[in-house]
Image (cartoon, rainbow, N blue to C red; front, top):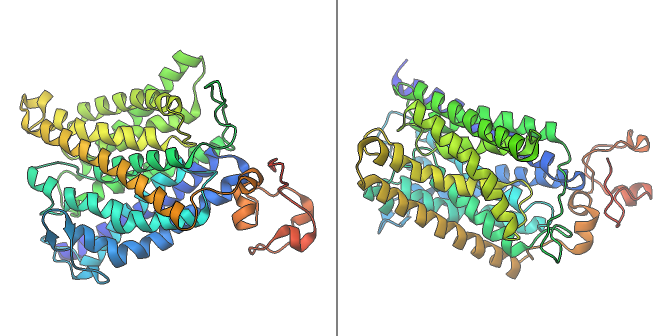
Length: 433
């Protein structure tokens, strides 16, 4: 079997694992939100995989990997991305499939931060805009060989900057403009805690994300014969473990109890932070990056709350803050050019510039998307819809139906109230649990 065929099998399997991470996003978000909105977050993940996939295949891939114009944007391959010429033995279709997995992951980062109060049609618009403009442009600058940041020598192996920082900062802008969930913040500045609906469900989502992350990082080699595959996988594991360890012990010290949601986000923060440098740093550096990310996520979560930005799943702290940290960490710990490993300053300056660029682009992109939604379909759900729960308002079915009278009803989408004359989710907003 030729290397072309081996690489094809390797990258297709890696792409499938990355796409399976969407199941992790779905379970994680469904577990973190309130019961009355669990179906809605799941449906948004379906939007990512359906609408987002098509938008990226038709337009986004060309903007990202098409022929370069001024180091800023691709100008061809629209509607036919498989015409890309690759310098490695790999079928172009496998490469396109893998890149689709990255694109839909970027949308899913935003999904959690705007949960429980966003107009569903606005989310569809957001998914399209992320896949045709926001993510492809950042990806072009960093990963297209002619992109301006790539030419400067910026390193972002699997996307701490291009995917996570951009997605996390776009999520911050959108959540800020969207406004908090009703009752989240009090007039005196205090915060009301909305308890997650299902921590075991969120935990299962985290395990799936962690599993998929091995392909997210190692798959970025695009080469089954790459000698760094094993070390990339090990760095991924160590960073996730150390991020979760830090969050676990800090919450025990701070609250006297091991906080599951912060431990979950500590693990994810370690994974986000190592994504840029997984191929460039040692195992000890990966552990240190993870440990620092576990600290960052706790204080970043508090900062986001203090700024009165409502992020139900902690996406901004996990992906935004630690995506930026992971980008900068490459400049500190890189084997050959890191400031702390070699004493050289050139790479850290480039990484700081790249981090600044993706922060500004993420914030601006999120604000632009929010405004487009406001001007077109409307950004926020109506107050009645939010109180009732977005599951019934937009999808006509609850997530957890424990009323025996409904057990024999068909599972297809329909309006329970019109069909049975019984209101499942009353306007009071009480949840079915």
